[in-house]
Image (cartoon, rainbow, N blue to C red; front, top):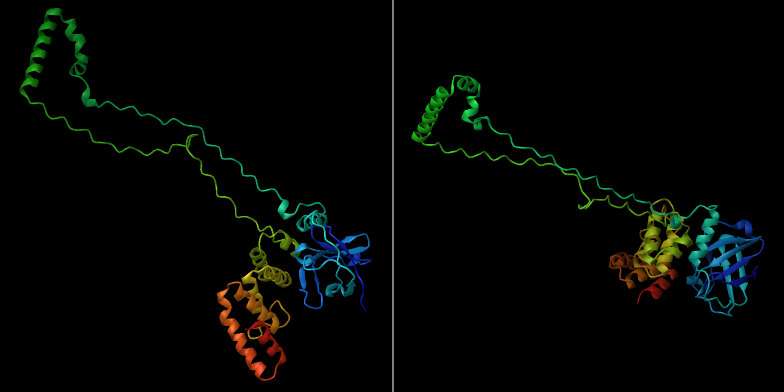
Length: 348
């Protein structure tokens, strides 16, 4: 039986809140689905839960709430909570206040008992690298060769004897020695001096100084701040539809199929062609995987997502879409009404 459902504007900007009295025990991190019979789009994976006293609050973000007309009645259904009711008049929504992302961040902090969320953790501090003190290279003085020792130095042991023998004898002997050495050097041509063999310089590692650039290690790869967030928080904090779709695909491959499908659907609703193509493959009856993340194949879902992906510019799905089209034509020719309607609605 349907009953009146209370709905309030806010508390986030351009959003609304459904109040379910006495249902605080149904609070959970898992988002709920908001269904509205008729042409109104289904809101799946964007409405989160919170509690206020004994009441359960269903927060509807601005991206979904803006599709409702003020002062208009709506029949709604929340299947996860087994709730069916009627909203007499959709309220006029506030245009100022806290955003949906801010409220989700506050709720996450409360759930973590004060532990900061991934988005609030301080970045690791990289200690500066101090250049080592300047060390002067050692200077090696050249070694004088023994061949350079003078002639008089070689006569040093004889000098005491010569001078002790008397001044005249010493003078005569010195004159004879001078004459001998003078003539000896004058008669013999001087040998060309042998060029010194060049010595290759030895490479010396000089420590870095304050004037040289210091190489710092590359920064670590950024952490995925969306990894541990709830589905509504990812939708609120992701910068684009493609980022939401990428996180959805990551969760599909990491053992979170429900989260993955919800995020892919949210990205598809925001125009991401790759997310539409992925959902079209999941629901395609011609390639359906019974062990996949969706419970059953769906002709209309697959047809709609294929068309959306093509319109978004994804050229890779054209062959798969054509295969589904051929399959539906065969079923329609055999009298399958669902196939006939899908061909009429999603193909020109």
